[in-house]
Amino acid sequence: MAYQNIQTKTEGRVGVITFDRPSALNALCDDLTRELSEALAAFEADSDIGCVVLTGSAKAFAAGADIKELQGRDYIDLYMHDPFAKTWESVARFRKPIIAAVAGYALGGGCEIAMMCDFIIAAETAKFGQPEINLGVMPGAGGTQRLARAVGKAKAMDMCLTGRMMGAEEAERAGLVSRLVPADDLMDVAMEAAEAIASKSLPIAMMTKEAINISQELSLSEGIRFERRVFQAQFTTEDQKEGMAAFAEKRSAHFKHR
Ligand code: DAK
Image 1 (cartoon, rainbow, N blue to C red):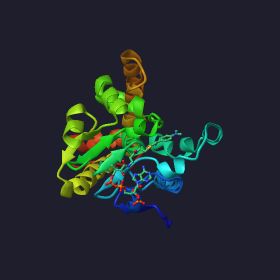
Image 2: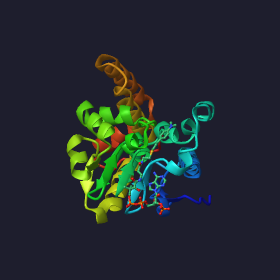
Image 3: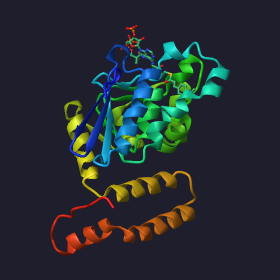
């Protein structure tokens, strides 16, 4: 499909979505987020895709919601149409593994979308921030919630209240980022991670993602009960039989994703 504000491609079992609105530092205008949700739906429906990488350009992953579009909105418009629920949250609702590969600015909604991904690989040029307070609002797409869970209350308060940016090293130390890499290596490292994930059993990877995500919402004992039931259910899959047989026979597993 032809898109105006993003690019998509497929490499093996990995789908790549690149924000491509460089003149506005990939600001997340309505058209861009609609295209993003359409591209995600297409990769979700494609049984040959096992993992997605979401990325931007060298200067920005995304500098946030499009402020020029946002400034004219009013409460009743946002409440009644809630455009964000349909488009932005398609990243959080995406059921297959998805990695954010971040270079440059990931601000406001850009930081929020990166945090909706399963993990973030950052170039040393990455800058994360929730500067909405400078615009007279607060984060509105999960920033106060996901950032606090990712980096703890103190740093989340610091960033959301001062609006300051966090560099890549600080973000890695704080646990926002899983890997920090030289800028030139960003896509190679992200693709290697995505290919590794896509080579596993897709339903098992999806269940693993679901279990880790639910850990953010349940008590430890409820989460462990959920994990045990899902683990037991995995013994109904062909891929469990294949994975364990391959180990015993000293060969690589050939998963059928069922
Ligand atoms: N929106 C629109 N345009 C943007 C933009 C943005 N967020 N960020 C940058 N641009 C545009 C600039 O206006 C400029 O366009 P021209 O003037 O050339 O036409 C171009 O990109 C280059 O930007 P700069 O000239 O400013 O570049 P610099 O290198 O000097 O500065 C910067 C880079 C990233 C520090 C600066 O551009 C900046 O501060 N940008 C704004 C960052 C920001 O405040 N982000 C948060 C946006 S608010 C909601 C859910 C979520 C949200 C809203 C609602 N609901 C559920 C209702 C999310 C809100 C946000 O993200």
